[in-house]
Length: 262
Length: 46
Image (cartoon, rainbow over all chains, first blue to last red; front, side):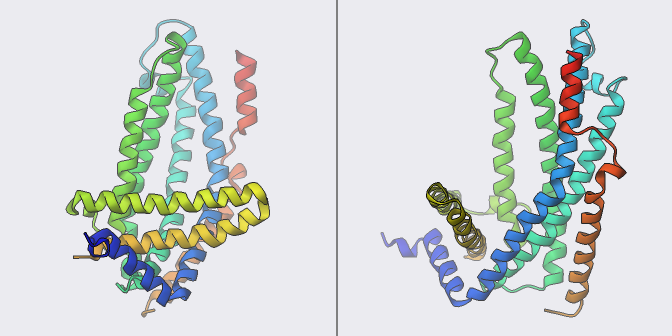
């Protein structure tokens, strides 16, 4: 069997060739990715801090309500006094987090994917791509917020269950995490062509091979960076910038190649 | 780059600046306890 002729390997080699031919676009896309992490951290950390504080206050009030004796269900308690104002504030903060995450993701990742489309020699209009990227991400970020809400509810519920049954296993939480991984993969496959369900139009064996190769590339790079950081912290930081972001760009270009490969 | 792309980039930059200003002033716009204050309240009540 000639490995080079298999679709996943052919697409990877093609992505590598395109990157080698256009190093400038690789640098631009990597820099945008790096700025995304800086901007995301800077803009969401203060909001996340407040969400954690609000969650602690709600858990505290729930604990008091449950300790007082038999009460209504968890969701009902959240919309009744004295927890209602805290729930309201939490929802507003989640709304702010939703808007900030959405805007930062669309601006930086939309631009980065646009340059990757050019890297893969599948050019597209910037305005058209960014607007399409924003539209598709409305669905993904809404699903992400839903996941976060469910995760918070299941998490709170599990904390309470653990008080009565310390050996309890969080099955719902694990199932939710599996769904979240599927959501990430579906989103990743939707970005090249801006079609929501592009993942399900591909051959499963090709998709699995592609995902395995992407995961190998990503984890091999993070492992190398960790090893370098153990020897020298600053060198690890530099290696992180020099290795990780180009690898992310390669993964994106490779995904585009896979999406458009007939 | 096509016609209208420069305007889009400018709009995105303005959005980022407004977001930065909003988040930098979140404690004034949205008064809420910090994580340590919330934990302290929880500890005091238990």
